[in-house]
Image 1 (cartoon, helix red, strand yellow):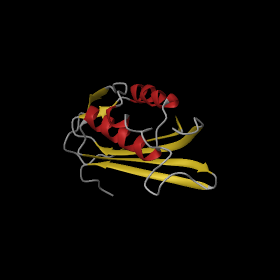
Image 2 (cartoon, helix red, strand yellow):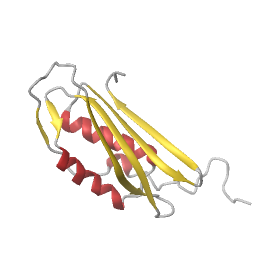
Image 3 (cartoon, one colour):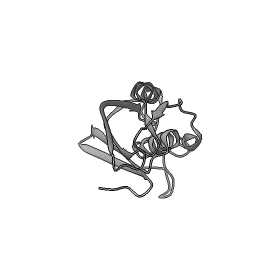
Image 4 (cartoon, one colour):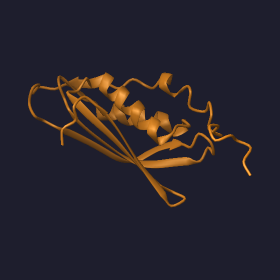
Length: 137
């Protein structure tokens, strides 16, 4: 029997710092076709972070789609940025929000979608999606 009330959580306070987490800077480069209908897609199947309760690793495929305005994400810098999360205890839902915040701040796209498809744990998979701007299909 649990000693927690229905409104308590054993995760209470473990993620309070996430909105102000200082992440590495992401470099960009100048896009030569601003105003075009170009859509870029970046995918990696090697994303890892840590469960904030157990400390066990979480693995995910990340899919990022965006329509550049004047800047594009520099991929080596993005790869180094992702390495930061390997030691961070962070919920899946928070990961995608941090990513969309940081990536959109870096390249200021017309729109962006970040999708995190997290590997099954205990038979349950999670897909978390965060967006910036008016995302197009």
